[in-house]
Image (cartoon, rainbow, N blue to C red; front, side, top):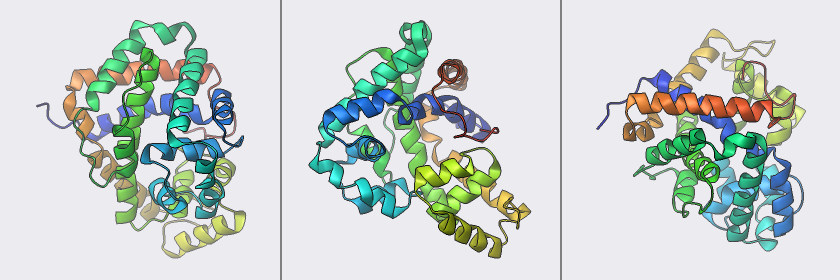
Length: 289
């Protein structure tokens, strides 16, 4: 059994693959497929498709699993979405959207040896992962592997890895006593995530709620008056990321260090391709992302 990777390597492989998963939340193909399946155009597809692996769950379950979204935003779409389309129909639409979006963004690379190699490595990394206390990962892990081209298999494998890490990240935030909105505010302050306008809009937080969170974080000594992280704030974010890396190390014990490095290289290569092809609109992510 390979030994644990250094935390930096765990973080690198995650970052190299993240864009390949996240692009589906911005792809026009997703809205088209979800609308064709019966959902309302717009944000409903995001909440329904990401929570569908857990079944026709209530808003509270989705809010608990997603963590950093305003509960009122989640309740605007869930459970109403399940009166319009079943979880199975939403998942089928999601895979069709992935196939189309990655096919468009990767172009000729979609049917490349690089994609097939990355899919094999990523799929192997998902073997026998513990699902206890990881609801989003567990829901996705119970799904059948997609019967489709390698780029769809790769996306599903990356999604398993991403949700496994995400569930661990929620545990790290809880341990640090950082709420959902606090997590957003402090992450924006690092300059490595969403821009502030994008974070507010996508997670459903009002200006007043955001300002109240900043004031509370300031009282805790984590945020300066100008919105920048203090020394204590930077230390807290570093601790959260270190805990997340530790809790998400299990997949990489299925590969040796050279294979993880190879997957990281392939992820970077493919991510550069989709980003150059316009996978993400301008103004969503900070320059340090």
